[in-house]
Length: 433
Image 1 (tube, one colour):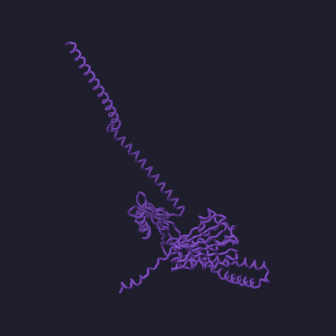
Image 2 (tube, one colour):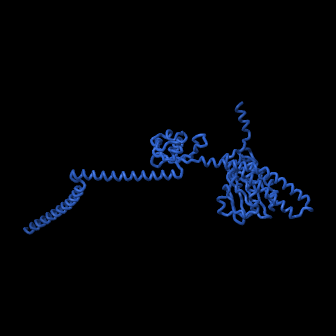
Image 3 (cartoon, one colour):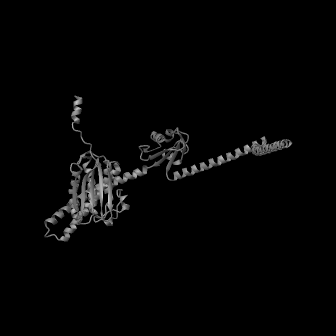
């Protein structure tokens, strides 16, 4: 019995010792944690005098950093403004309420303000033109806007291209570019080309008539005129036609440059009839080059809404180019077919073809492929550009498919005219009655 009691006492003492050990362990670990927290707080929360000095020192450092950053930003903005002045571009930053926050010297010069007088003013006060303010407002609403603004009727006044873009942060940026000199040079060029072309047209027409008369005389007097002479007359006729074509293209360029978009006199046009007429008009030129012309028109095609003269010019330019690039004895095929809601005209040749590098630029003004590849000599490089302009003016598109040494196919599509609903007029009349 006594042994049992002793065993219970020993177990109780062991349990007490274990509990004490656990308690001591927890206390020690908590003590270490509290000690660590105390040390951290001691480092963070110093005595009053030390805290004030630390805060003051930190504030001073932060202030110095802010001043350095502000100075660096001002230097960068000044450098950018100087660069913008060097390239002749005005830079203006407007706030959300359209007050000028930044404006470089060029911007002041363009709007005729003393340097430094625009900052802080409203857009209408600083820029002096409600159209520029309207561009800025549109940019704030839509993200971007641009327009060309002539400040005064005076020739010496700047003509500004204004581009506005909303800032991803706040406000809107304006870029002002003076294009008055560029527009003046464009007008001079257009007037020069127009005058020169008109001066050349009369003598070229006269020479062309004389060459045609010589060709007829050579044909009627074939027995008396040497073959070499007839060949030279034929070449003279071809070159005269080329010159006449270049003058016509230069005149078209002058109209495009001076008037922008050409005004078209629209009517319902039979594109097949236009293609046939163009082929017949250019058949003599093709025959002199030893090239045959063929035309195929799909029956029952709808009319297109356009100007017959201009669409005929598209066919003429494409056929003329096709003949120039075709070898003697080959054929140029002209076709008019339906193309969904459009009517498409195409001109196909089996000539030298167009290199892939040239196809992307073939419709650019003044762009010409290697003229050594043509038998008809060079040109102005305007025929295809003018064709593209006319087709675009009709709401259509033009494209080319070509492979070197195989040939080229130029295709343009014009929207078909809306069909007239039968009885529409009577129905309208009945309703009025």
